[in-house]
Image (cartoon, rainbow, N blue to C red; front, side):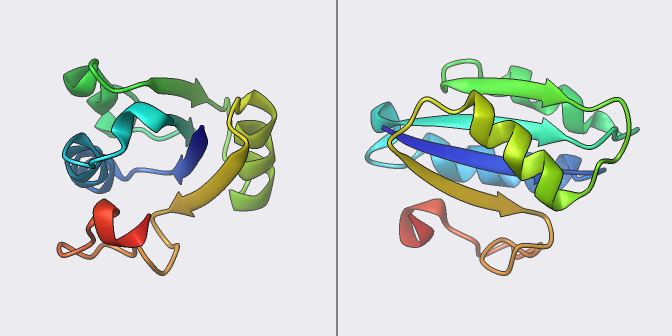
Length: 105
């Protein structure tokens, strides 16, 4: 299993686009998605509910603990043999409309 750990902060549209891309991934049954939110105040913490058929775990921090600590929190919850980290400011995903999870993973 691959654990995809995504750290967000006010990235509702980013999360929606990423989850939409992962929906069509040919190996989606082999990964879990862990969304670690750094205390967003937009819809970042609820957008995953539109994708309940994906294996998603939502974690919410009470404050913005930073990217590294949020990654560690997600890693501690991960069940996969392999960990893939990403987030809004992570280069493969950096608010690119053409970011395609199939190509990245």
